[in-house]
Length: 375
Image (cartoon, rainbow, N blue to C red; front, side, top):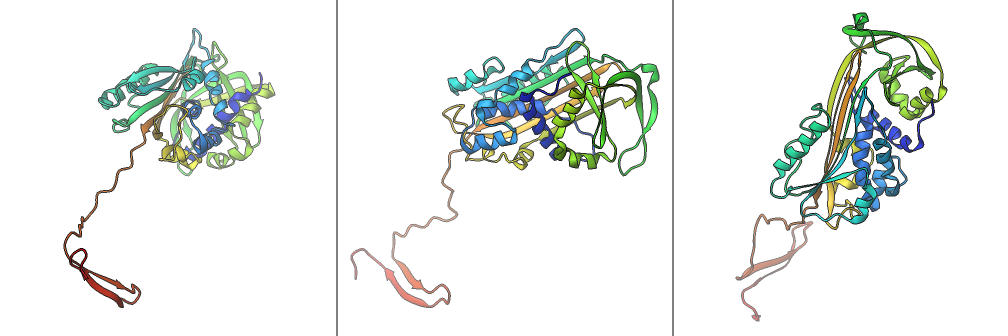
């Protein structure tokens, strides 16, 4: 096995940052690659501070490197026992003209569809959600919530990831038994515990053990990591220990195998996120404001109005089914309107005036104006 590829290290670091933001006491699933794909597409067209903030959050040097990870994702292939797809789609308002350079940089990894956001935003939302549902075999539905797309929407960048794969070493169904599972700070709960004894890639790291479960017909695998102590403590130190990139490096580069007696719960998890606050916490701020600069996409002034994400995973004896989708919604920058006054005053008749010391109220000058030219 080889170590993690250099072009993927940025997404691994970004995934570590996201995990630190999203992890809590409950179960969690999300796709760093899917979220990064949507933001990488945005970064290709970002300029100025907007580009700098996005690039830093994505651990990239700048917009020129943004398209690389899209190619890495697109290069993953399935087989007879492994279904994998990760389409990227640019949904454009019918009237928007996108810069040729932006399209050129994304050519081959992003398809383009036109939508009528201006006069039929709800129909456009349903069209995008239906396409995401189809791309993910019905596992991700309703990705973009009502109200996220309106007549000001000009562009939506979406990524969907779908995986259905069989294990190389399947867990015998007859060996699945009810066993206790011990969550932190609560009592034990029963789970369907699968069991397997097999030679597997194994790594003993600093404060954890990890094992790699490969899928058939490709290079995909699931890493399962068991901390020595509480998961919450491990999560807190993960970034300082090199993040998920270093963890995968340990598994992939060590080349060591062991006869592992493995007990793993059969589980299913799903989650949905509005990522605006999360991304702002990671330093992506200008992109969501009137200071946004996506001039590399189009002449229109655009800002990101929403980033939404959903994910699903089902791990069983035969294999895994997993799906995720991300949408970055771009809105036309609102034209600044003059505020409506609370009161309207027109001094077109005689009036009184005074000049005073506002600290004491002392009237310094007092007078009136009754008609032009009068003394």
